[in-house]
Length: 111
Length: 114
Image (cartoon, rainbow over all chains, first blue to last red; front, side, top):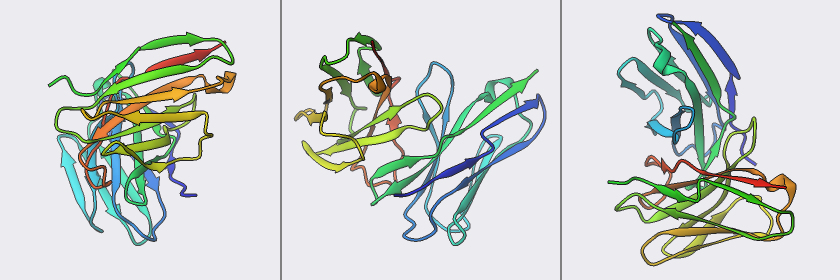
């Protein structure tokens, strides 16, 4: 059974702070790693799908890095804003199809 | 583009009853996956449908079954409901469902079993 671990479980920062979260996944048989943002009362929304070791992706103030050999990915948010408050989920495709999710990191940004 | 739509949004059922949840995928998507999200947990994979066949199944009992129609929409059926089935049920669609493309999620159906 695949295990995807995320840390921390929750995080509270002030507006303007930069922050980062970790996702750990099995390093063998790597296929892809997904990051999703889930705002309250909305649908989970894809941020990144990463497939290559050393890959680094960026969307506005949010970026992610990937290390497939050691089995981890970092998500960075630069200059956090209240609208960044959400749960951030990472997911690892099992057998190339089913997404196995971590429990998520819940970020709260105070203005 | 309406994206992924799920119905109903909320549902209350009694133990032992049966329930059907529905999902329409994003336009152009052919694969539908269903997830259960219990409080404090990440979404748990139930099963995936592609070309009207169940392609992969998670660790859920046979009480959970599904169907995909020729227009790619899908249903999730749960029989003999238990209190522990109370959760948010999410539907996600993707193209081919190969894992290297992003999934698009609906807003979910909140099922409460009393």
